[in-house]
Amino acid sequence: MGRKRKMVPFGVLGLAVSTILLVAMLRGPIGATQHPWHLSYSIALHHAVVVVVLYVVAICGALLFSGTATSWSSGWPTSPSS
Image (cartoon, rainbow, N blue to C red; front, side):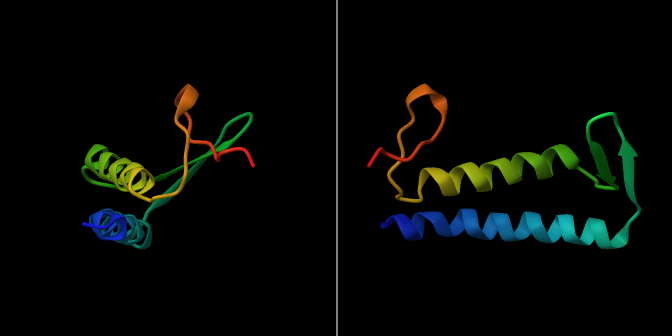
């Protein structure tokens, strides 16, 4: 099975998670809180922990099966030096 075929489930999962987030934003309400150095946004989202875990799985899974040359030294993906 090629790398591209292994990435398909992560793409489908990413599409599902983004659809869930879009629907939650369109239904509202959307909140914003001002902090000293940033703004914090919030939406009414049921099962938020599950959605966040699925989001991380979609992003990290796609990264791991992408086929790009990455080096995982020091824990961060980096491009190889030219």
